[in-house]
Image (cartoon, rainbow, N blue to C red; front, side, top):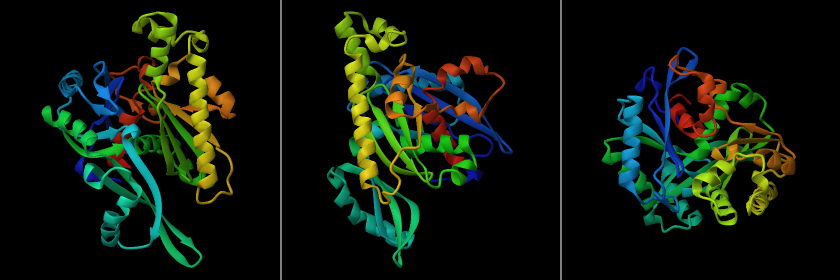
Length: 356
């Protein structure tokens, strides 16, 4: 997963997260063991620029990214791009232990068994998660990752049109896990050996649910309920404009607004179904509960939603905060940057890629 630290020197490559609601960009700076945010910014994504995870208005999105880069005075043309899990198929599979060369050849054939897309229409990659020793057999767990080629190309074409080059394309789950590993430090390896925790990214178009077990990616699922669904429901039921609906999402009466509780119930039902499925079918089913709940995304600002989710799931939500262990350049004031906390974790995790 890592790329040689010598390649990047003191500054990371910028991490770029192109979301349906906003475009986020983070560049980090490292001095010794200390990492700080050197450059940070976000801009609203042009309305209706996405359809089903694919960028459908590339010119508008490209110009918005260009403006953000100009505003932040970023000269670097190489970036780490994070791709939403909405656009990604992941499968965890177990295979006999083999060399890297043998694995590369085997995955060409294995991929067709697990991917619903025609293989010629997909971009496929994989990563070895861990070695497994069981019943005198040596095996390894592999994460297979795939996305529709036209979706990936829609992102790459946007970047190339403004002369940016994606050195690597991350999946959201890995970007977020990288942030948590940095926040938790050594305790991630020492204290999570037998723990399962849930990452929930409450995004604009959808919500992504990610399960981490023993400090490693284990399972993910995209849930087609996001902030835009709440906005649309409030607009229709309360007869208000989009701007008014967005404003109402932050008020104490949010859960009582038209259609909101039904959507929350649907979201919870899908979260519980996903948890039940994972706990039932995971490799070692001796562990029967989720230990921690981590949350991120703009949806966490919807008034009362986190408390309701936490109460129903019987877990205290922990907000993923990039600034918890990563400082800020002197040009930034922490109190003013707190508004970015729900949004910039994925971009920040992508920027950490060169160092983790």
